[in-house]
Length: 69
View 1: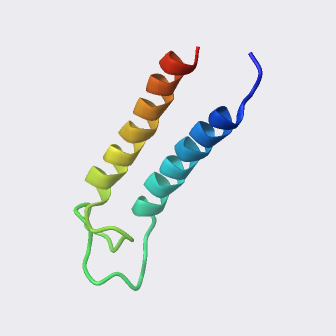
View 2: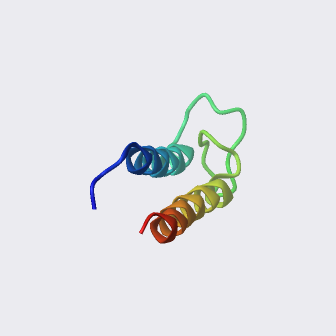
């Protein structure tokens, strides 16, 4: 199966979602308040937002895998 522009876009979306998930869990000294895990992170809803972003990446992967094959 040849790689099309749609494949590249889908993989880019998955990579962006994974990078965003990792970025939400990183410590940030300038954060206004601590996250739910007790440290100052980029996102104050760190465990929830990280799980949502990872689930979205997995959903995009499996849904597009079914549609593009």
